[in-house]
Length: 243
Ligand code: DC
Image (cartoon, rainbow, N blue to C red):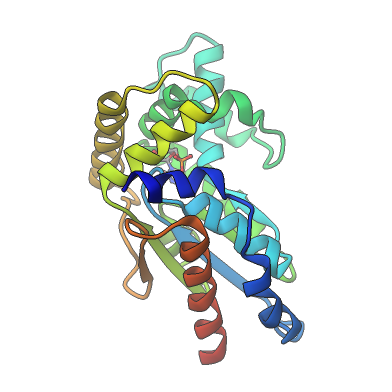
């Protein structure tokens, strides 16, 4: 398990190009058609890395929709407001651009937790729908990753992948990520965070985390990042052949 987890954080950008090249040469993006790819899954499942790689290989724009909720939460915290202040959060969400994110500030454990709280408020989600759909409607298509892309934001996406992994595997990856950045990692605290966030994201009333009926499941518990990315690419290719 430890080796598989280390694989996720040490080989993020290695080795898969050779696998993808034949597909790219074969015109993987299609002949001018639009391809919308929805990638959902829980925290630390690998969906973000997989989405980035798929977007790069098909030369599609990519939106990590978690950043929208993180940025909303960060603005509330910066203004000293309560995270449950729905009206305040809606106002922030409406004013968000899709590119002006300070990722170093937003990608912390604290911000993930705060984002999950903000994301449970129906009016905040409603305020963010149109911007996400506009992003998906770009001429060549797009790759979006999050929790509700396949179920709500792009329910007619050409490809839907739901990426999962056991909570233990996800916690181990997060812990190794922190250690490699020279930070302290408390595995049990990380596992507790992940479990709490899974539960909040899955049990909220609006747009809960769940696979769309037509999503392909990708369990990465036993896979390294390269194998998981290759499998995701195979799923995209299989869907393209069907269309
Ligand atoms: O993917 P992430 O860990 O950056 O997301 C942070 C939180 O934002 C997550 O716990 C739930 C929420 N979120 C959401 O509700 N819907 C999305 N499409 C993306 C994220």
